[in-house]
Structure formats: C-alpha cells, structure tokens
Length: 452
Image 1 (cartoon, one colour):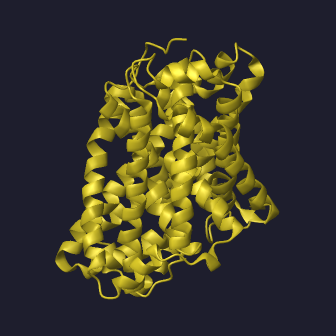
Image 2 (spheres, rainbow, N blue to C red):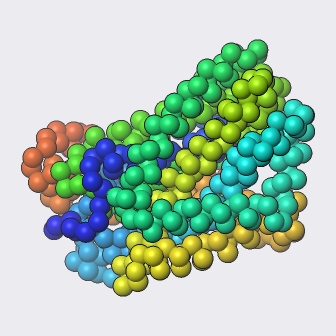
C-alpha cells in the first residue's frame, strides 16, 4: 500500500519541527503548569512522564504509521486499511470531532495570549500593580468584545498559514518559530530561578506529594499527555500522511516527544519559582500564566517590558503552530471531499469560530456564563471534554485498531521503511506496549475517571 505522492514535508527536520510545533504550544506552556499545580506538582509530573513515554509516544508512532501507510485523512485511513469497510470511518470521525472542539477552546486561549502581547507592546501591563493582575485578567477574559476580536484575529493568521500549504506554510513557519521559543524559555527560566524564594517553587515541581494525586489527577495527566502531543484526535495521522517515505518514524517520534517534555518542564521551571516568589497560589487555574508572568516581567526593571513583548508574542506564535495542525486536520478532511484547500480552510474556520466565540462569552463572568450544560459553563465543559475525556477515548479506539486489527506485516513494513531500517525494538518494546500496555492503561484510567 503506497503513501500518497501529493503535498508533504520536504525533509525529516521539517516534519519534526512541524509535528513538534503541533505538540509544543499552549498545552505545555499554558495548561501544563496549572494542571500540575492543581494535582500536587511533582507527583503529577511523574505520572505525566510515564504517560508521555509509554502511552503518548506509542500513540504518535501508531498514528504516523496509519497516516503514512494510507496517505489519507482519518476518515478514510481506517476504512482503507480494513479493505474499505465503511464502519471504521467513525473512529476517524470521533478524532476529527475532538480536533474541532479542541481548536475552539484553543482559539479562546490564543486570543488571550494575543491580547497580552498587545498590552505588553502598548505598555498597559507594565502600568498594572502586581496585586491587580488577577482582577485585570478576569475583567478582560469576561468582557464581550476584546477576547472575541483577538481570537478572530488569531484564527485569521492560522487560516492564512493553512492556505499557504504544507511545505510553504506549515513547515516554513514551524522551522522558524520553534528554536526561538526554546531560547526564550531558557532565558525566562534563568530569570525566574534567580528570584528570592524561587527554591520553594522548584521543590514544589520536583518533590512528589502523592497525597494530592487523585484518580481525577491521573486522568488529567493522561489527558495532558495526549493533549500536548496532539494524539488521539487524528492530527498525527494527517501529519503522518505528509512524512517523507524514508523518514525513520521511531526517531521522529522520539525527537517530538523529547521536545514536548522539555518544553513542559521548562515552562514549569519558568512559572513555579515565580509563583512562589510572588506569593501566588500554584493551583491558580487557567489564568495562572497571565497573572504571574507579568509580575516576573515587572521585576526585571527596564528590560521587563521587552521580555514581556517577546514572550507573549512567541507564546502566541507557539499557539499558532498548534492551531495550524488542528485546522490542517480538519482542512485536509474537507479538501479530500473535492473542496479546494482555500475554500476548505475558510469553511472550517467559519464553523469553529462560532463555537469559540460562545466559549469565550461563557468564561468567568461573561454574558453567557449563566448558560450551563451539565452544570458547567461552556468553556469549562469544553476544557473538561478536550482535556480529560475525548482524547483518551479516541486514543483507546486508535490503539486497539492499530494493535488488534491492522495487519502486523503492514506495521513492520512501514516502521522499517520497507525493510531498510532495523526495528529490533518491535516485538520486545513497541508491539507489546501497543497491544497490551497502552490499551489497558487507557481503559483503567478512563474507568477510574468515570467512577470518580
């Protein structure tokens, strides 16, 4: 079964940067610190590391194999591997629905980030007293027009990149932005660690407190691993269809996983020492990065404003690389239905922005905050669904398909690049984890989460 010969990544490095751009974004820098803080710091970190290596990376490799083997979007990939049995398309459909919901809430958070970049640029953040950042964030995020304007603007940027294509749009942007983000985070870590009282934050991050790690926390760790690696939603199947035919899937997956984990750790080091140094609550929720980091920048003196401008710009750009992958998965599916790439990107953007606006208006004290589903505001419901429920469910369906229904010979052929790459790890490590460990872990955590 041959992969498609259409548009794709130009090199393995480009593929790694693009997929790492999908994996590394707000999931690491915005979501990881506050989820980690909520469930006990180091205890959550250990569970998260386990899930990233033994579940997340296995899922990533599985999706890469499915994508490159078929050269199709998730809706067509599963039926194609099962000799065009149409029932399997619903596995891909579940992933695309998850992708759609994640992109909607992602746009809201990305809009916040873009606003903070603008406020850094204009000096608004520098003029806020340290104790007022929480109030400032809540007033902004709960307002009507500003969050909506910025999320729409962010979506416009994302759509433009998608229209540019895989190599000239997605790959080019990712290769430029990812190295810059890493450098900036390292600089921020150095400054955060030099604040008075920073050692308490380091201890909080790396010293496990298992008394705070609940069943819900374990489910959140799994959801975070899947969310940050962009697996369990069809994105990596799409990117797998763009991989060069000679790309080593294991090496590519390891590099992406290392990048994802490193950025999460660096984000924790950049944020938690600052949280404790500024006397803030490490379980401060979604607004943590928008309430604490401005205090860190203010503590830098005259150069603080420059750091604030650059950081929030690059945080927005990191969010952009992830949003690109989500919109690309949706666009590839629609364009495969004989709709042009430009039209597909615009149509999917128009659909997702409606849900994103509704989620934005429901946040905090927003005008739609009184409208609730299952006792939750829409923003909180989407955050729950996309963070702890839907990705694990989709991941379970994917890994069961890969381990128990896809032909073993096809998997070996794809991982070995048609016999040109040694895969001695297959039976001992990969195939055992894919067939037994990953599905069992996903099932146990899902059942535990539902019981709790």
